[in-house]
Amino acid sequence: MAADRITVNGRDYRWPRKPVVVVCVDGCEPDYVNQAISAGAASFLARLDGSGTCLTADCVVPSFTNPNNLSIVTGVPPSVHGICGNYFWDRESGAEVMMNDARYLRTGTILAAFSQHGAKVAAITAKDKLRALLGHELEGVCFSAEKADQVTRAANGIDHVLELVGMPRPDVYSAALSEFVFAAGVKLMQAAKPDIMYLSTTDYVQHKAAPGTSAANAFVAMMDRYLAELDRLDATVVVTADHGMNAKTDAFGRPNIVYLQDLLDQWYGAGTARVILPITDPYVAHHGALGSFATAYLPARSIDDAARRIAALPGIELVLSREAASVRFELPPDRIGDLVIVSERLSVIGSARTRHDLSGLDAPLRSHGGLSEQRVPLIANRRASALPPGHRWRNFDAFDLALNRLP
Image 1 (cartoon, rainbow, N blue to C red):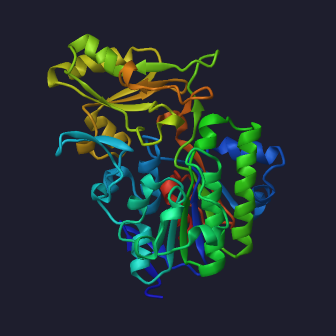
Image 2: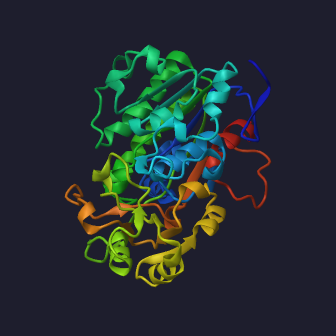
């Protein structure tokens, strides 16, 4: 052991006395767990009522995958680590780009810091889009279920993953992608017993199935079995989520969409304004690139007028200036637009109607991104001691809870 505790991004973390596993369950609002327990589908999680810790926390807004996973593994909000979406307008290059490259990360991670101090660290993610960010400067194991058939010891710190897990490489659009993450985590814990492990799933099921449905309960039941196995292996386990999930439809199941680029083009002329949808990623069949958070770039003379007009639209909950949004949501101001727009719970924001292909949606639209998807579970398999009264828990407190507050 290199030290009794280390400091990462201004926060102190104790060295783990036993293996620590932090799990980010993509799209898991608290009711997914609650409904599965009520249905008798999650016996291990049910047993934690009394023997474990159950908190409700806030994720960061925008409630999307990349900013929240990076907040969890850095312990700080996007204003510090720099990842404020899955996708953004890069002013330096003058292009809309995916925010998957580690060059956009402005600080180190807890995973990398512990690995550099001699800990055995592993990170397993469902989608490969997160791998480079989670694995930045990590001296250990880091791979994705999506590309589990391509891992090498040189690039990922491990090889022969399919043989280790005993499962074929799953399709990216499947519940099996998340199960592969859990199965790999258990097998790796048995084989190598890492000091710290981070597991991050996909929200394929949550985009299709509401809490309490058979598909949702089956997903939680699967997760419950693997969490129980990690517990039996004497690991300290903390489970949280990157965001919640809500239906974004009317009473007939039709998507409620505000096509913001079309409106701005109508008001100010085509090519005058630019709408960026930070939910955009390579896996648009999940959500059609439709979420409840957007940013808009406009000429200075149009900003105030656009803010008033957008705020008056049905389905819009909040419109903030860059300055106000960067403070309220702890975002890097140089990576968001002149305006930040958040839609209400049952609505999403689109760009131009012609830019969204909804043919891949085989179920009524469910998505995320706004304030309505901010509440997430924060659950541990040990009972915490000395929890601060009145503390606002965040999902990026997961490693603090796991390493500092659980006996």
